[in-house]
Length: 155
Image (cartoon, rainbow, N blue to C red):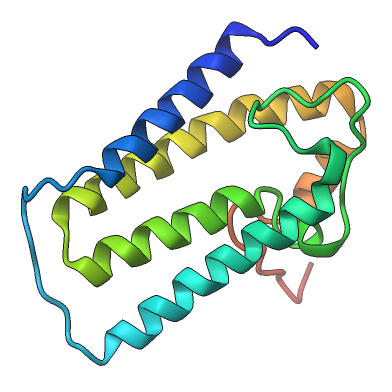
């Protein structure tokens, strides 16, 4: 499989943000009430759970690159029935929960930058998925990008 230039750029930026998140930069700090710590840990665990489930469901389809593999098949069941990008969701839940738990404005900034990157990466990825799988547009209407879609009872 030949990897496209955009794929390499998106993955490189993602890895750069992962590395930046690990740096201990004391830009701005804040405090949160201690009763929120349990909720933040729970959110991080949910994020990790999403990542693990999605890894197992993707199996041989798994790739760090947005362009689907040549032999990939479209997953529309399991966690993918509700969320089109559960790994990105899991990563964001972990990053945001750690940033808030630590009261780190710097890590919160990196988390927001990662959210923006994932937004653009998914636009590119979904274009590629639509090209490969004609049924992707229907799937897209019935599932949420990062969170489950709230269905309107009247529709």
